[in-house]
Image (tube, rainbow, N blue to C red):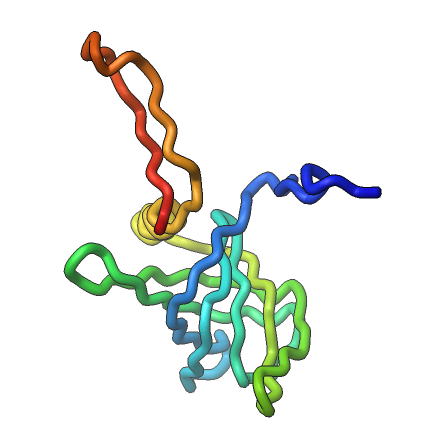
Amino acid sequence: MTSSSDFNEKRKYPRVLINMPLNFKMTEDSSQSTGLVINASEVGLLIQTFKDMPIGRKIIVEVSFSNRLKFEKFSAMTEIIWKDIYIWDDWEAYQYGLKFSQISYEDYLKLKQVLGSQSNLKEVTFGDESHHQETLIIKTRS
């Protein structure tokens, strides 16, 4: 029998569940397509789209996200490392595992911001607040 602790995340870069719009284009084609980012990590994305593309294809992605009161986006060059058919209602679409192959430092910081703001960590406090020692609080997402 397997315990629930056997299913703990063992990846070096854990995935964070997100739901963000995505625009992308293939490097050899200027036409844009759309999709949805399902999860993200520091090294890649899981996306869903209606566009059929082969494994190994390089695509440029642009992910839009909300940052307080304004919308921002980050861009990166990615490579499709796996592909699967995804059925949603009566629609046939595709899921792709994308690996970042090139991302600017500025866009990498934006990605880290997205990953941090979407974290599901429990709230923790270190130190004794009554003695005004330093406190670290990691808040959970509601």
